Image (cartoon, rainbow, N blue to C red):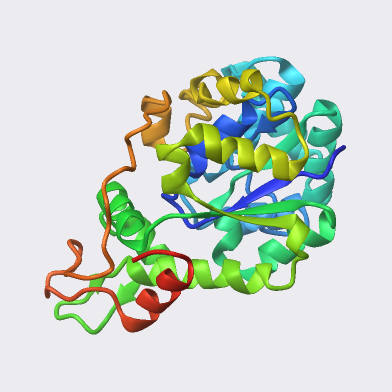
Length: 300
């Protein structure tokens, strides 16, 4: 198994489309959300996901069904569930390694946003794969917050501890999730060797994918030729770029699953750190700490 590439980003930061694009490179394999760094063992992972949405399990089931069963059907998903049950005491890292060995020599690309909820998950990834490469996938806090707000209307936000009790009545303030999760990523990457980490603005990938994707694959050490780049512009060809069978429908962003075709202009709208936030009812904008971190990362 070659060292995996692990995308670190808050939810709604282009992780589904970017991972699927990278996965279409002839030498890579893009995974849906497998959430294999949330616990030491598969049993621990199940416990960590128990309070999450029921579809948090879908990505790993779909991968096991596809890789070992050759397709994703109700039957192969059932077999995948049994496959996991017999490995309840196996480490999550060993399960990911088994998948990587099966798919070798292709490089696995992981994109599970729940990994960044704590530094512990990211450290677990590094311990399991000391030579892994980490991509910090960025998105402007306004765009990320608006996207999360529109998708969840507070449901996921509450689980990410984004409640802002300075408003009356209390409302969910999505900037807090962006700040908390991005701070986790920055803190973790401070301890990772320079050669193993890369910061990529999602907006740049969406606006100029040829340049951005070529930069990424050159950094990984894979072929950056035009044929490979053109293949990456077809994320809809991923086996996980559609809804799965009824017993494992998700594993990626629902909007991506509905329309996985890459759209170059999807993120071209300029964003500002100034002004009120649409999800707040009091007309207030970003906090000073959010503005400071965003500016450090190159946003205005």
